[in-house]
Amino acid sequence: KAGVTQTPRYLIKTRGQQVTLSCSPISGHRSVSWYQQTPGQGLQFLFEYFSETQRNKGNFPGRFSGRQFSNSRSEMNVSTLELGDSALYLCASSLGPISGANVLTFGAGSRLTVL
Amino acid sequence: AQRVTQPEKLLSVFKGAPVELKCNYSYSGSPELFWYVQYSRQRLQLLLRHISRESIKGFTADLNKGETSFHLKKPFAQEEDSAMYYCALIGTSGSRLTFGEGTQLTVNP
Image 1 (cartoon, rainbow over the protein chains, first blue to last red):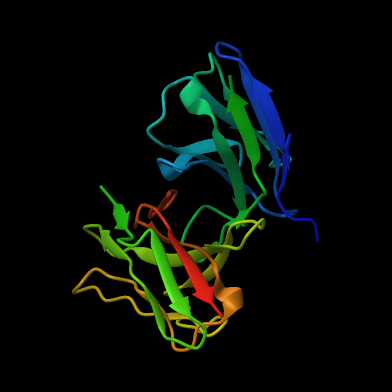
Image 2 (image 1 turned 90 degrees about the vertical axis):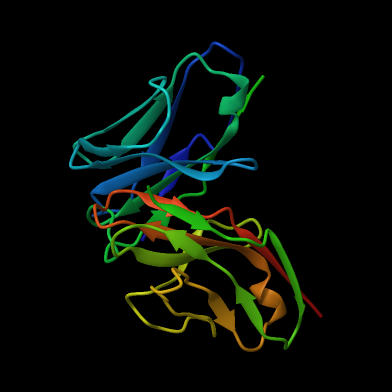
């Protein structure tokens, strides 16, 4: 079965622009989480959605937002881009809310470069 | 607050040698601990989790609550084990996976 699909895989934006990233979870998975990966900060939690509801949010400014649709697909949006937003954005899905039992499966990521 | 620390950013061993990747955590409750691995040009994937108490690809990890550690061990390293390894934690409130900084393991022939 298909894995977690993230689009676009690569994108380049300039400061001040906004970007929308998309994530299609594994079929049947209802929880989607987003992480930011950078060389300096490593992997940092952005937010988690389950059944279209945001269950938790990481320590990121309000410029970072997300949503989940009824088919469990998720999008995240970053407005007013800054140079420091350059990163690999990873999406992960699981059957249910994150727990020790519900294993996360990660996508390949969307690599955002802000110039 | 929950925190995961991997003290070694880089670890290099020879093929056939034992390897141990260290992971320490801080959390006031009873966390769930995981090891994730990322091979070159591949996706981040689960290697093992402490609740399963299983051995994957020869790797094992024991949760030591007294020392708040979850070190990853393998008695005989193989070249194909070369990868980035991340220790991660979920607290009892769930909903958030906290990762360590990662350890880049290189197994030399």
